[in-house]
Image 1 (cartoon, rainbow, N blue to C red):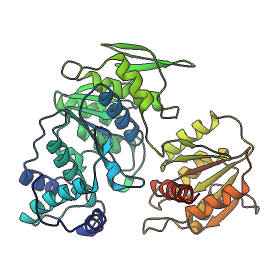
Image 2 (image 1 turned 90 degrees about the horizontal axis):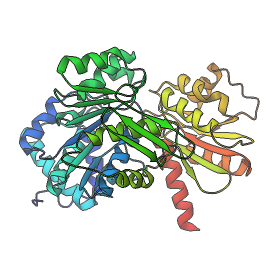
Image 3 (image 1 turned 180 degrees about the vertical axis):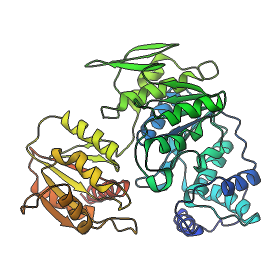
Image 4 (image 1 turned 45 degrees about the vertical axis):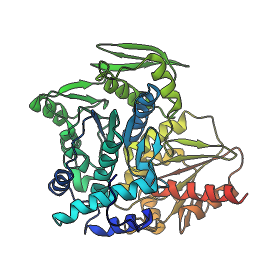
Length: 435
């Protein structure tokens, strides 16, 4: 990569700079990012799979990355947000890019941005840097996860050769609309004329199918064009063009992962002539998939579960997953959430599965305070009798309390936000380091 200015900046310096570069954290629209993309002449020569949806995006991306890597292809994968390190967002050949590579890519984007004095958000800047890195690496295929929505998301400046929608539900309503139809329209904005548009949402909004028909996309929906059948120790995939039998369950836990895996296989089959994969690639890829924080069960007793679920739909899935586990005496919830989320909906979706609520504040402007969460619990009908609800200044304090109170027959469920899960992961890593 060409040496440019800003060599003195560390990755930490860059990230602080990017956080302050644009007046808004989220600023929907493609004009600014398109200007810089054009200046950079970012013209991918490889196929692109773009993955959108309310939940399940990251899991679907990582499954595709794992299978394609197993098949021997050079894969670029861009996901967000990260849990511990920004580097998690950009992977080449299943390896996080280095600080040095990121700083160089940021320098390239910054020079182009400054030529036209264009302001970019943190996510927009990172998206362009990711594509710069993928083009430099001359990868065979790229998988892009949509950040928010689809139609006006920075990822959408790159045309998808195959678009995947994993699920459509209420979230980010201030930006995407307050109905599934409005949100579906925004998410379907990643579809392209004549290209595959795959949807694994069971209850597809009319706006999604209408958009696919309007632009002439090759629309494929679960249950009609592809699907799966589940058995105790294996599962089968079917589509109108292919079948895969006796597949292992994905390493990622959760009752909805087969839907994600089915969409993943349907997308990869779009490229079967140019980028063929074998049944063994699929099997090994499913088993090798790793994505922290998605119904992740940590070793030790009492058992700890980490889940980044932060909207009612994802939390309902979390509740189903909890119900499918072995019986536990009590379930302690370490819960912290951003205040722009549907807090009452989240609590109501899981209240029947939780015995003790350990609510914590998140130290961000968008973070809800423990006091605010307690008021939501009261509205949901959860009465604090001195044993059911406790407040803490941060998630780590709540988790430490849970570890002291819970017995080996109990379980601790950490959820509500990427921030919540990442704080517990950092704490556990720190404790492990000092042992």
